Image (cartoon, rainbow, N blue to C red; front, side, top):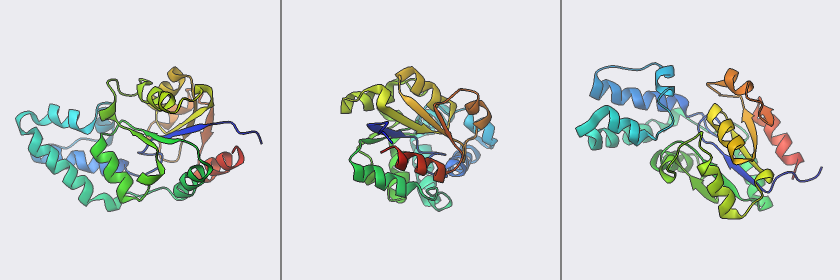
Length: 215
């Protein structure tokens, strides 16, 4: 089969890693300690867009630095509840061996992103890691995607974004690249399915077979 893509961009949470519950727990640890309340998963999801630091600053005000330290300590200390989806490392290893530029574009801040990628042993697979701290405009803005495309001098039509959220689809379409929506842990899967992504994958195995067959 003819090679379809020259570069690949991955989201982290819900795409590479099962970190969503860790994120919910980490925010609720802070909410309980500093706000004397907890939030539902949907309430926390509704906050996504800005980085963790922006959310914590809004929540905790003058106690932001203390809360920030507590958040990342909790996130790191409890990271054992998260993991890579089975088969993801095989995909990353394959793309790396083939010499493709492989990047991250996530709404997470850099600190949380690197904690996750390093603890799960995959940080070395990525040639460019673009987090919410590295852009002026968060997803669904295409800014992070365009940084990747321009950094490697790629034709946007030959770049694939692989993510699980509505914002991944919208950012990809605005950037003029192809988008593969993965549905194995998508908290907004029904809405994602309505957005006409270029590709949909229900399992890591489906994604692997597609990627291995196209390059």
